Image (spheres, rainbow, N blue to C red):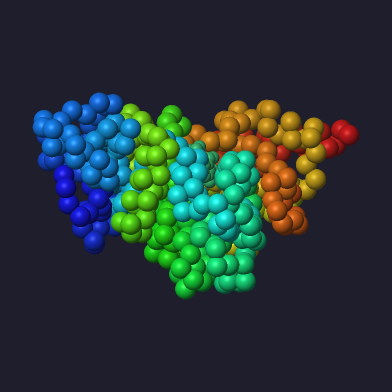
Length: 407
Ligand SMILES: Cc1ncc(COP(=O)(O)O)c(C=O)c1O
């Protein structure tokens, strides 16, 4: 293929709704012998029929299969489907969410540049910035997630990128993305958002002025806790090419098998998210009635400080939220988690199963954020029956209460 649009540019009819895009996104079955899902093309070597084709092969980096490292038809098919959902110009698929973040961060900055970063980002992103990017001479400055249009006061002549995650990891802070991107666009600064929590079904960063939307496809897009993948969706073809170049230079490769699994996951994404959301709301309401609970971090919860922004910008909420308990000490934390029978202790959320982990945001924040930084229980509401999940949690609260009574 040789044309102006990248191979994975969106092709779904404009009028299609999200669920339809998720079910039918990507190449049509007629383009792959009627096979309903894009087949798995595994490859390293690609062969060429003529010397001219061989010598010209690098021109195909952005939209053709030229070497297995840069993607096969399976990779491009998934990229096309995610492009449809993000309503992007095109998408680069990477080996994990972490690599999508690292590649985005390194694609647009070099020594002497200034990078603005929201304080509520995913922990390993912070480590990439401190352990890798700052060593390359990039100046990194964190800002409070509620900064809004005041981001203007931090922008400098050498600010190249504003990096955000909304809602933020662990504390679930919501960022006023349109306010930030308005400033960034006026000043010619690029913006990127980690959109893993909402997925493109419930939030479309590019519609709010963002230049790059990042997903850990490991989470909801896959939905089955058995593969790792990331995606960088670009607002323009130029940004897409820059991202594709940097992914190629770093030798980042997405496994075609995992691309297949995520493509399959997309087919049920809308239905799964609806259920994750419904159960999360049931659990949140139940938590809100427990006397030990002091705060719930879930943007769809009316009392969450980010609720107004969520209502304005998002079309849904997913299954991950935080709960703070009045002075939960170490022994109580252990009895709470160790006796759970359905909830499992595990970090990588977005799968079919419910998870619960203790979390301590305070050590990984530049700005003290009061009680919002306190220890919390992070819950991922899976696809089990909500009543069974509540019984499991009720028993956990029972264990904490009896420990409190006995000490
Ligand atoms: C918000 C967020 N972004 C990115 C990642 C990283 O994704 P991956 O595990 O695919 O590297 C995670 C993983 O937990 C995450 O929670």
